[in-house]
Amino acid sequence: MTMLQENDVKQELLNAAMELFSEKGYDHTSVNAIIEKVGVSKGAFYHYFKSKEDVLEAVVAQYIEKEIQITHTIAENHRLNAIEKVSKLIGEVLGYKALTLKKRLKISSFFQDAGNVKFQRKVVESKFKLLHLPYRTIIEQGIQEGTFHIFYLEETIEQIMHMIVILNSAVTRLAADIEKRPDNIKMIKQKIEAYGDTIERILGVQKGSINLSEIIKIFEKQL
Amino acid sequence: MTMLQENDVKQELLNAAMELFSEKGYDHTSVNAIIEKVGVSKGAFYHYFKSKEDVLEAVVAQYIEKEIQITHTIAENHRLNAIEKVSKLIGEVLGYKALTLKKRLKISSFFQDAGNVKFQRKVVESKFKLLHLPYRTIIEQGIQEGTFHIFYLEETIEQIMHMIVILNSAVTRLAADIEKRPDNIKMIKQKIEAYGDTIERILGVQKGSINLSEIIKIFEKQL
Image (cartoon, rainbow over all chains, first blue to last red):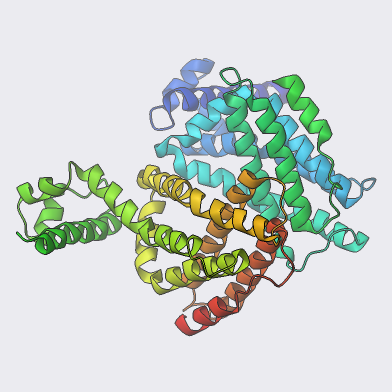
């Protein structure tokens, strides 16, 4: 097999696993079901993964990879000031979530299943651990630039991460229901504005510094 | 049976259930084990509860009852202004949690068990639902008194509730480990100060308005 084919098989196994986990739940999906769906041998499966739990870890890693990558890229962008970084961060994370809403709703329902809670916790823990450094980079930059006014660095990082998680899940909940309740678009707009306002307050930046009008437009288009 | 005896039996069943759930987990506790522990008949059990799940609901309700009651009492206290109410609320909730730390650690480990996650979610959902009105009362009072400066009432209620939950669980985690790490008391102090500062910012009250020095002293004495 060439490298490309190898990666293809691995990715197909991951996609199949993700689909089966969200359809049947993790506990009711067997390794056999995964290899049958892809049409490869058990040997091929164990070439890439140690166990079913190992596949799930890879699914989790892939699930959060994009958000981690977006955050790192923004944190390390030398052309942006810290306020622009925060706006861009919220915008791109929410924008990515809006674009992948349908896929994520399936996965969310999987994570919300009681039996899968340890993996849901793993997602949040991995995310917080991996996001800590880029968040710290951005907040320290804002302090150096004199635009952020905070007293407690660690707690501010923690609170901003929580705020973005809470905003994301509120927006996802509202977006998931948008066909039945078209008015939810107004509530999404208000949520984003309200959380933007609170993030400004927590960071001690001037009111209106964080600009989220772009992301609100994206949601209005997408939904 | 007199009324008093009736309540005693019910409470004994609840206590026994809570202990067994936290020792063995909900799934591995039978109604038989509960009645054996108390020394009553199956008939007595079914006089008070419909099922094992029904006992758990009552355990959950009792678990959050004190926090709900503290919050309502403070919200309805006509002698306090809104800023005093917020200080007292954080202080009394954290103080109650400090006093009941050992008991709660047992219950937390039960809630953290994957199989019990739906009940953990029930705790948080019930709590947010039951706390919404008293929080709203306090925040509206602060707006009327001209000391709170916010634009988004619903989101502010939601964010303050989340902040207090996050602060509580951070403090509980640090307190649980205090024997091994005596320095955690400093970190608890800092957490409380940091979250107090953030709650002031979210509510738009003047820096230093919310006074949490009393609760910090309680923690220093308790731990």
